[in-house]
Length: 454
Image (tube, rainbow, N blue to C red; front, side, top):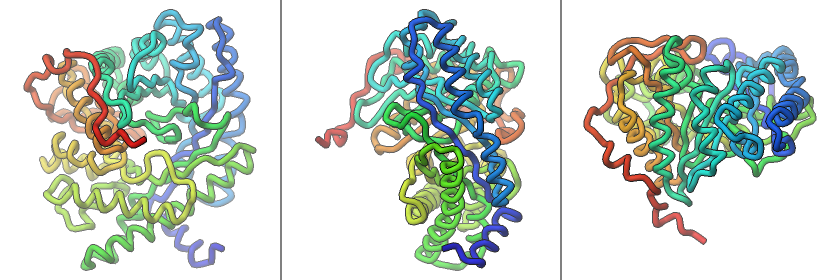
């Protein structure tokens, strides 16, 4: 039972510490929409999404009003479109038609984003996968709410380096096609190693083929709550610090569990998972970097930052799993640059570099996220950065991702404005030494030896 003290404490978190449910994400399988005719396929997809998600936004708003818990986003994820469109799509332009259908369905249902314009190519690439990947720049340039992702590696299969090379080209092309809006198309595109099937967060959400026909997944957030909680243990040892993080993560997750169960009941759709990631926003005080400073670091990026992040990530998960039996998705701590004011400050002050961020991704929940880089960065360099991050995920048996934004026409030190939850970012320098001969080898990097567990 929740007692009156917990109610009051939760109210305090919401009113003063930026506690919110970041997203209710409705996963929808589109496998029953498959058709050999592109127009019939698009009609089926639109009908399926708009029928299933017709009450999603209104239900989220009703829960917000009744419980006083902010629910920032209502989102939809769908079956990877490369799987759905294979029978009908013969050209990249055919896939773009599906992207426009998804965008139209998102606008009809009123959701913030729709994810799943995706391909899963960790071991190889079908013709359908290649066509979808080739279509990504045009699809993201011509839509408002569609998000795209490509899974290019896993601990079990190794890394598809042909896909890694191709995605360097695709990211630059997406940046060029959306250069009038500071290359914002790249903010809706993420590449993965070990992508989870049940992630509710964009841009990487898709509805995995192992999932039910429909599912409700909820992502909670609470960096501000965590920072505030750590104010009371500034002089404590690591044991006490860990206990405080676990207890706070438990409380945050309980809020998400309440919203998830309520949304599931009202929509008549099964509850899937709670993703208990600490997802920051540009709001002052709602920052992962601020948590590091409460732990005793002058700035994010100072020596000790990776250890602090490892501790935070682990204790958040330990506290969260006590509050919900169904924790999934990414879960832990995100370290984006543009969406976190404290991280932006650390970059501006010179405390945080791309190389330090890469080291931190060994222990965080995701990877190199929302990082603006010069628009003249070479394709091979982008592919090399992706390869490094994918290797970290593969070897460490964890999800890693890359969301780089080469901002056409801007260079190191300039600022790019994305607006809303995406915030703004200083453009970070990248290593200029060439890696093209390595990237151009092609083929696959094999799975690590510890992947053989059968």
